Each structure stands twice: as structure tokens, then as C-alpha cells.
Image (spheres, rainbow, N blue to C red):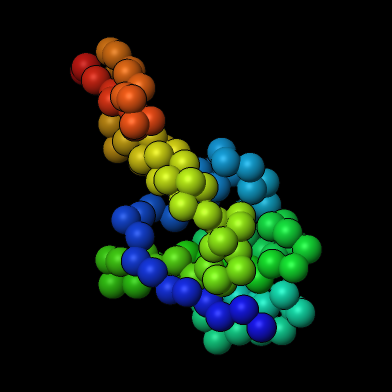
Length: 131
């Protein structure tokens, strides 16, 4: 059984996170008001719970569920070491963070207009807005 790694991530909006996961290719993403249990690759219940979940069958055949739990203003990712080396490798996590940021900025700046968008050499995106 793969052990879950729990690490803090800079997400604060479950809907923006779910949309960002969809943006990077995870088509079946669950969002729950109350955290739900995660399951291992055998389908057995794990003690970890999450509000945003990608179930194992939508990741890869031998995967565990991946989940993000919001608790006291902090978001914790619950991703198995197996999946962290594969479907949630550092480059995927970076892409997820970029998509999340775009979604979140779009949400909190609703009514503003994008004046310019620049992709920096490191792949980050700089967006200038105007009212």
C-alpha cells in the first residue's frame, strides 16, 4: 500500500482548484462541503479525508485517490507517494498551481478587464488588469 504524503499547498478556493484540475486533464473531480474519505488502490477506505477529490479510477489503474482538504484556512494535499512520482509529479503540480492562480484571479477580479498577458521565460504568467 502506498503511503499518503500530506503537504501544505497555497489554495483557498475549492471550486477554483476543481476547475484547475479539470483544466489540466482530470475530467472527474468531486467537490464536497464536508470532507469525504479517500480510498487506496484496492478500493479500501483510508483515514484521510478531503473536500476536493480525484478518484483513483480517473488517475491511473494502480493509483490511490488524490484529495485536497481545507482546514482552518490551510489547504492540505493528500497524494500517495506512488502518484506523486507519476500523475502528480512536480511539473504537474506547477501546472496545477498556475491554472489555479488564473482561475482564482479571474474570480476575485470579476468585472476587471485583462489589459495584457505575458508569459515569462520561467513559464509564469503576468496579467495586467484594468477596471
